[in-house]
Image (tube, rainbow, N blue to C red; front, side, top):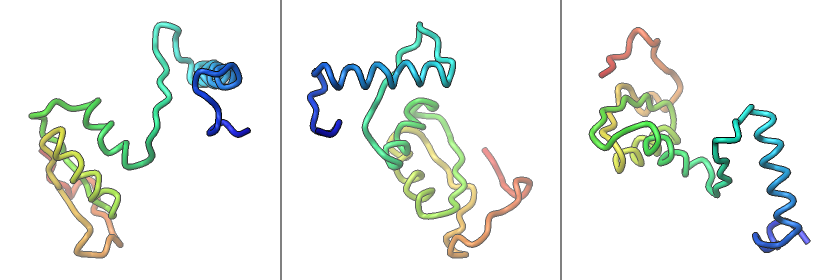
Length: 106
């Protein structure tokens, strides 16, 4: 049986998740007064997680769009903050990025 087929309440799964948490705490020096959450989601989930955790709804946030994933991240951020594209490489087919000094940030 694979982990995907196990009950999240079963003894086998609980031993796996407890070991994973202990290993993660050790590896990243996570103190015991912090919770560790194992959440589902891939890259696109992070498009929401980042502004939800780092921004307030009225915060202006600069986005440098260097590819299609960056464009998706910008569009998703519109639900959670006030994103502003300070540069997009779409017109260059995402083949170049500007120097940091060339960017006009908020």
